[in-house]
Image (cartoon, rainbow, N blue to C red; front, side, top):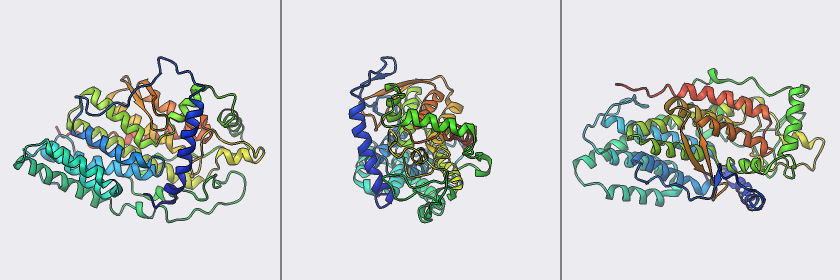
Length: 424
């Protein structure tokens, strides 16, 4: 990932947001019912299992590259949890497999199978974090008694990982960045946004989805520039999303910063938390993680297909036509505006969690882009709604991109939630 131009240049806005966090946090008075300084909850709190543990290992492996390539994160996490899901269901078939044909291995160690599947996938797709991944694997196996059960689990996990990796090898991800984006002139056309001199992953919408049929999740497109709806959206983001905005409240500033984190990291943390709170077993845990990550991976694919089909400009470009001094509160990512894929992913993940667990659970979560702060939520739709609004507060999306991102994300989530059904 580090060789991707997105990875090289985007670190500048990661640094910028951390500086902004330090400045803005001095002026924010957190609402005691919503915010508090707490340590990030661990996954090994007595309620987790091997699946939640390896999800945490994966998030730790991605943490050093926060802000570099969330699209690749989504693909890796979907492959990881597909392999884990298939591994545990080869031992005891409770849900349908993602990749069929894996031999059944009753009596194999579930913990060994999960560890081996995760290790194989992460070692292959995140090789720069080999030391962290190998250490986690060695530590996991050290807790298991040596014998035929452990050996069978390791073999099952590796087989599941290799089958999933082989299935996704030619999905098109390797050429997603190779189709250069050439900006067109004229109003409404997406232009590169500072500090970037490129558009990221213009071919990502051509990748083979994990579950969905793209044709069933289309969006209508951005507002016409001559419409009253567009004029209203333009005025709103200009007022609330500017770096020096007096309309944006301290709470809205904090929401913008909190949800600026890569979507795959933030929503996996939420899923991990609620899975542990509910005490789900490895099979149910594996299915929830697989579906949440399928939804986000497919959300990126559907969203990027639309982004590069409509090629709609970002607020900083539009507002700059009449006010060149205007700058967004947070740095604009190097992709077109419509739809907001941050919103798509949030609602896709939330919809899966709603379909599987309901929308009344209470939980807390943290963010890499606003360290030392936690936010409390009741329900997944509440978090997804706030996640979407954050992009307008940050000055990086029009409201319509968020509105239609919500529609597309919920549509993707509903479809994905039907996958991997129970077999008994």
